[in-house]
Length: 321
Ligand SMILES: Cc1cc2nc3c(=O)[nH]c(=O)nc-3n(C[C@H](O)[C@H](O)[C@H](O)COP(=O)(O)O)c2cc1C
Image (cartoon, rainbow, N blue to C red; front, side, top):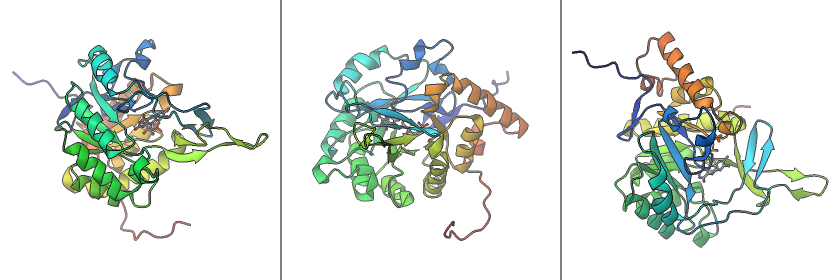
């Protein structure tokens, strides 16, 4: 008997089976339950769901306003509102349906010790993988985000690596000079995969009152406005990660099948969908259908065949303007 033809959208990511290369992004889907109330939405349409950033103790988050719509994007400064690791592990994880998709924890912290403890507790849980959000400020070293400094990034990754054998995904910040160097350091420190990119820092001002609109003054910019930056960062990280077979979840402004294809071609193995869900919760099945159509038209049998297939002319990088 012939074995069934493999689904062209199915991928293996860090040894995990994903039914689709699409991943729902942290902070945009609550703890995996948020959109399941929307008619027609199903976690089965995506390969994995990243849960909201989780800290050791519960956090109430920032004062309002926490979100603000910008041209082609949004600013957010939620402030990592979450019920704390023990609640997530003991109360939320048992309610998730692991037969539908893979679930990824998003670990956040203010100190390396907090990252270690949160990772340790998720390691001792049924979660499929652990994503470390290194964009949080390091309170012991002047409040600079861990992810904006290669040394601090590598220290967080090494510390988390030491306490878990689960797949470890490092979420890189675009708010730094040399993301490729940071990626190199995180690979040396033991990461299994990358998520590229987290939000870019921005702000908005109410000119009448001359006050910042976001309660936290600054917030993370996401959505289509950041897509060209995110694509370049994926391309740059891929130059480092491909030799080590370290896969990338490309993300930042994906809102269509064309966007998803661009991220795959730039070097992503999976594609994150975040802000776009706020205005189209049923986007994922449409992107899946568009990917199937593209693969058929290009005589490809697996979406993985697209990863890193960018055809680049021989160029010497120079000043763009
Ligand atoms: C409201 C909101 C909350 C977010 N919360 C988190 C978070 O807790 N942890 C994290 O790593 N990223 C968080 N992010 C970043 C997203 O996971 C994603 O990396 C980013 O928004 C870029 O993708 P997008 O343009 O498709 O939204 C958040 C984004 C938004 C819009």
